[in-house]
Amino acid sequence: MKQRRKNLLKHAQKIDCDTLVTFEPENLFYMTGFWGEAIGLLEKNGKTTIIAPELEVGRAISESEDCDVITAERGSGLISTLIQKIKKNLVCTDCQNYSTMLSLKKSIPHIKSSVEPFYAARIVKDEKEIKILKKASKIIDEMFTICSKKIKVGQKESELQTILMTYAMEQGMFDTGYASTLNPLIIAGGPNGALPHAQVSQRKFKKGDLIVTDLTLRYKGYVSDSTRTFALGKISSQANEAYEIVKESQRLGLKSVKPNVDSSDVDAACRKYIEEKNYGQYFIHSTGHGIGLEVHELPTISYRSNTKLKENMAITVEPGVYLANKFGIRIEDSVIVKDRPIIMHKFTKDLVRI
Image (cartoon, rainbow, N blue to C red; front, side, top):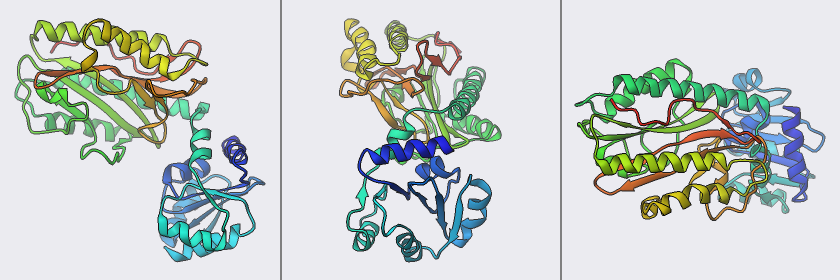
């Protein structure tokens, strides 16, 4: 935790700040070890304070590391307590709430609103974070094995989701709370698979379906993300061809992951191969993204990105093709950037036919 705080302050200093204030639970957790409703304060001397309403104080004390915990009333009480602590500091905050920022600016006119120091510190993972991500990925692999045994004709997408989430929760994994979906998982059979972010439905699996199974779950705060596409019975020759193209594209993308490589080059490695095979128009999203305390965080793995990969970044590589009203295919692994990248998911990329 000491090293994390040093990194946070180092990045704060780059934007002429000596104090960080966080309202976001992910950043609070990274800074303190506590995930809850509270404000986190990191001062230039490394002193770390949690300002929490009374209902959160017990957990804040027991779960945080080397923090002072102050009790304050919810709402304005939290803000006024914070202001008393930071009046003379050069402050950067991740606060995104307009009315809260107005209140802070009245007392601290030069306060900066920026997530940059937080994301810059979080983008490279430490050994503790990598260990958690590896364990999360292992559990997801076990869930793919369950898919290979439990998927059957006539089963609803929602029924498979229930089986998988029951197992996940038994292992200590939980829904990420990702705001853009109503479901914890993406399970999309047949034509539903052509929607990259399909909602889990009551559709029943049929013979000849490709079933996209995207498992994105949180373990001890950290998100692992992997996708496999299963075949139920005999599939079309076009689906077979497309699967092998995506598989090779992903292999080429993984091969290109190394420190000091532009993240756009990873996207290019995947995309160029799919384009050469005349499926480029069906690859309709970026190749990947960073993972950690959020489902999508820096770096972005796309042609628009100018980020150079660094050792111990955690990213996904997930090319796919999507043919409207027919099928979708995506193969995805979470990866730790190294000279020889650590591909955290071991479940086969060969097409599993059920």
